[in-house]
Every structure is written in structure tokens, then in C-alpha cells.
Figure (cartoon, one colour):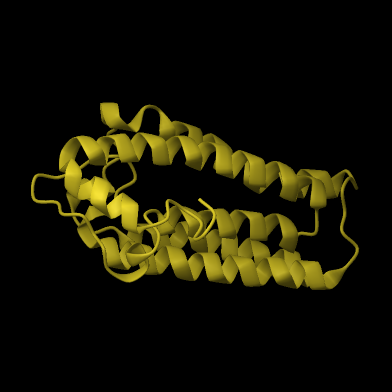
Length: 187
């Protein structure tokens, strides 16, 4: 029970930190561009699912994990995910936006976690919500949440990379050759 409460507090902090990390008008805007291709709306829907599904399945007593160390592993994943996401947002600064857009003066960011991973903020988010499912102790939700998150962020990443290739051309292609898309040594 304590792990679930802690997981809910960490989940709330995911949303509370967000507005404080946005720098400038562009980064706070919810106005989508053609590059977004509906990915923001999909992410919002998936966020609702990844929050409600584990709690609902637990309420229905389906897929419960009886081992408390798994819940603590989920808490650790959430903390790591929040840390990676916050680090990513800080490094991106004013370029960190909710919707896919590129500003006129924008440059490709290659510092911090972006030296290794092109989308570390997304990886941090995936860690947070998979960790949440583990923290509340539900294996069915963990599997479904993992599939949903990799699906929606896979779509978002493809949309974002098309936009960045269009804007930066060969410079972004070279950056892609030096980095992993989301998971080092895997993808």
C-alpha cells in the first residue's frame, strides 16, 4: 500500500514539475503544427490509460504481483525516469515543447543525455509509467503500458525525426548516426 501511495505522489510530481521546466512562450504553447501529426493527442489519451489501468486492474484483483520488491523496483524506475526527464528538459531549455515544432534560431542539442540518446525525455517518461505499473504491483498493466508507451512514442519519434531532418538535413542525419534513438545499444 505504501508503494502505491509513493507511486501516486511521484506520478503527480511528473505533472507538477512540467510547467516549471518550460522556458518561453513557444515551449508553453499547446498549438500543434503539421509536424505533430496528432501525436500530442495520442500521448494525452495514453497518459490517461497508463494512470487508470493499473489502478483499475488492482481494484478488480487482476494481475496483482504479490512481491513487494517488485513495487520498490517500480519506484526506483519512476525516480530514474523523473531524473532523466528533468535533466533532458533542463538541457533542451527553451527548445523543450509539448508539441513538435522548431524555432528559427534552434540548433541541434547534443549535450547532456543528448550525446547518447536522441529522445531521453521520452525514455524518462516511459520509465516513469512502466515504473508506476510495477509500483502499484500489476503485471498485466505493466505489459499493456509498455506496449502502449513504446507504440505512442515510436510514432511520436518518427514524426519528430521527419521534422528535424526537414529542418536540419545532413546535420541531423550525422547526429542520428552517432546516437541511439531511445534505448542505448538496442534502438
